[in-house]
Length: 94
Image 1 (cartoon, rainbow, N blue to C red):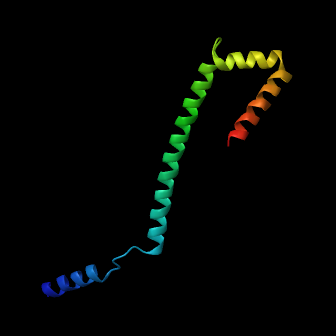
Image 2 (image 1 turned 30 degrees about the horizontal axis):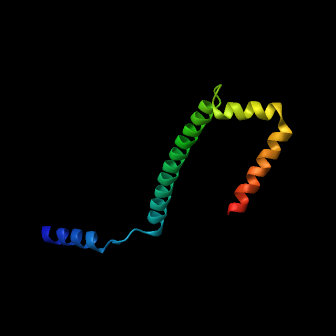
Image 3 (image 1 turned 90 degrees about the vertical axis):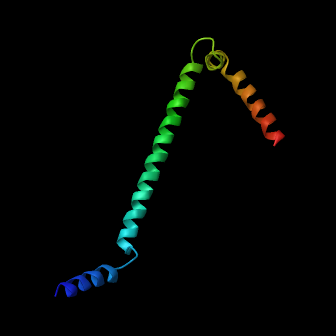
């Protein structure tokens, strides 16, 4: 009798599905997508933080962004004209 129970045990172990079912694959896929989204989100947050730090540093007095902001406040139409000419020059190069 002990042989019979071990034979049943072997049959039960080997007769089960060798590949995951559709639900298990869906769960695995969802888990992978969730991990990927988490990684992408973390990378995006790090990039935004670096960009924010760069803009904050560029806005300090004497830095280029501060100078451009001051010029734009003093002469908005002239600044708009210069920006337009710059855009045209860049657009014609391509």
